[in-house]
Length: 370
Figure 1 (cartoon, rainbow, N blue to C red):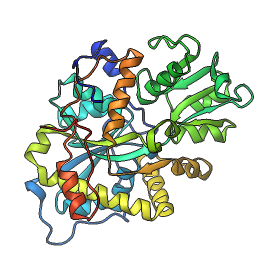
Figure 2: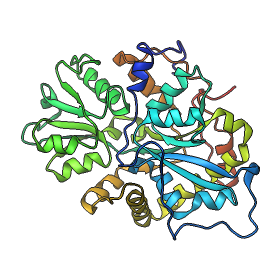
Figure 3: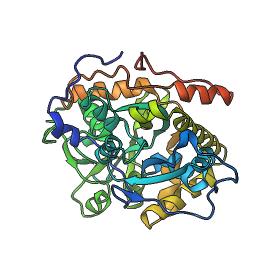
Figure 4: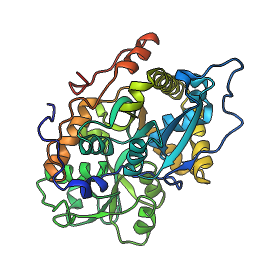
């Protein structure tokens, strides 16, 4: 059921600023990714695409953004862009990436559903399009097994989410409502204490005993498990076919209109990367971790990397109907006025790439451009 009523956020820009999908890497806004000798070099005789010197690509230092991590590490982006240089920026939060897209600091970005929705509605549908999918899953409710032994035990406990109104916060508030419990979305106070905590500090807060659990993305969930927490619920189990969008690909509408060949090249690289990831999971996991180390200075240990990787599915399908549902959950929680999402998707170039590759095309759930 499309959400297609008002275009305005209830609490304006302040709430929009509070709705990022937090990343887990140490690099911040504007950080440049490092070169690696294993990456594909520009082939002799290659030409620039659309006459561009470069295409600027953004992503988070997060395993749910592994398509971009691996495509950078293995050189898939550069291969498809030819003599046009692939440049990278690594972000910590959705609003920074949306700001970079709006200013032209990046052209294309890997980002979560909440910042995509909020960026689109705040601009009244003028700044971005979602042009493809990247990942599903990778979000868990992990808890202290000494304090919480069943789902009903969550009532009365202190549970972290990354930030007010971010993708995981909205999901947890919706789950709480489904249990029949009451929580004030703004303060986080009620039958459950929702503690908004940066993913980078959540493991230490858990170790210190100030949290009883957390509803968080990977690899934070697996970091908590390494500290003795247990997985109580995998969010995938709450969705049809166990799939929901956690990462999609956005592009500046201006860039899409002016440089469709460049956008198509990046999408082709993304499709090729996902195919390689799914065919070579162990090598892909290592490549993603190598790029995380290059970007943040620190690789993930195996006890965190391995379980985190297993919970994420890499897909070209943007799972548009689930983005629509996530928007409905934000409305239900009182964090978002009903947004007009018609036109947020343009899957034309992705479906062209998929068709040429002999793969099934994907659907925009009625939320595509006219």
